[in-house]
Length: 308
Ligand SMILES: [Zn+2]
Image (cartoon, rainbow, N blue to C red; front, side, top):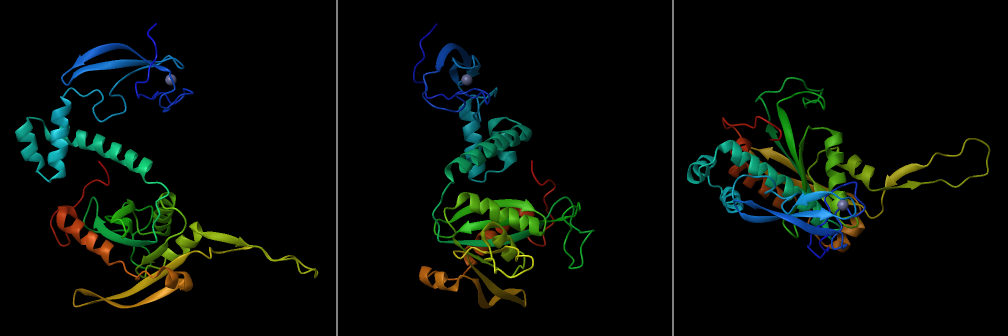
């Protein structure tokens, strides 16, 4: 039996005791095989006796194309070379390109999730960006004319939270115009940031209850000693929570800020000394609308699938 050594390879078997643990002395290289990108090793885990390839759990696993070619295609996509142009230049089908992109996107998400933890930010901008998916008209709607959570409606929103200090998108997802979506956005944000940052948004009424649902404490009332049922504990916003809204109005197609309203934590906000603003995130949304043709308002293109 070959000796185990430090290969910088964790065991990829989820049921193994050494799952994803590095340098535990359990991994041996047992064989090699040839690929278009050179020789690859096969490893064996001493604990679970499982074998796996060097490229397991990477973008390149089980691809028949040379790694360099895949990287070249991904780099070209990054600098916005058209699919048809890459497909022609590298001699691969557009379906193959989409598959490589999908793999890379999944990896990027996993790396993001690993790296984005306990991020120290003082304030977060929240915003939503509407778009149509599947069709350009809405059918089912509630009393306010908004789409229902369960409806297969054409309208969808990209929900975003953004840390202006680092120009960082903290959380983003596509969902319906509902309280659950807002709550999901706040939960995703809370999972990434350390402590409780200040939150700024537009006047959408569901942000406040969603923030309180995530950042709260239970207020318990002391017993009075008088007869009768004791008062039930109530949820109240965490004293550290700061939330402010920008009041805006559209005039002749232009958005103007009429004022701002500090909803929670005025004292802490003054101490932090940050301006109430969602302008950077709105600017970013404009960039998205400009760069991604399906998000362009009043255009003929639209997104056909929520996710590919
Ligand atoms: Zn193992």
